[in-house]
Length: 261
Image 1: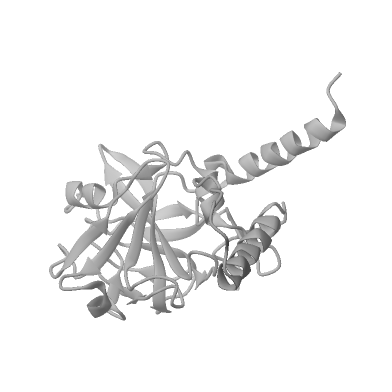
Image 2: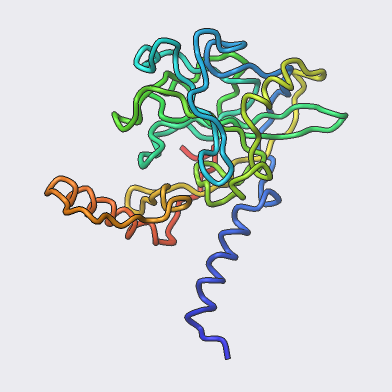
């Protein structure tokens, strides 16, 4: 006989999976189809920038872009929309993300309409609002450090799965849920059928809350035990990490829709 204590977690996971399913998205906006895609820094082709870190399935699920001659020179440099679309997220998520913008794009390829989300993270400033229509090349914000957590760089992702948002655990963490960002852009520099008004699915993904943050690292890093004695500083860091992981076990999430204030 299956214990109730084993059934309840399964029911919670099933509920979350249904919430994140693409079929739950409701067409609540009209946006213009993309006429092509550019890189998000120094468009169209990222002159003066380079990719310091690439996509790795199960690990780093996007690309990090920095300026030539050192990442510090990129601080507060402009970040641009890679194509026409609608802003489905534009806020400070805190945790490992900081200021994040997500744009939902529609484009026509092989006579079919396709959708994808582009994500721009660790921004210093956000210049757009949720629900806003943006055009290719429009400035979304500026390169930041996630409130001093990282050296200045842009973390850039493209999602096939519209239910991911900022929750990597919602996808497969491989190319079934993600595009290789720069490869996607370079393969779709110019597209036919751009500028058409099409219904676009509303955002329906989970976000951490201030009361119940979650720790992103736990989804792809296993804890490591140190054999060396810890200093008071490292002990404080360990307690902070433990507190974050304790909060991350909560099942209380916030569902973001771009129609919310």
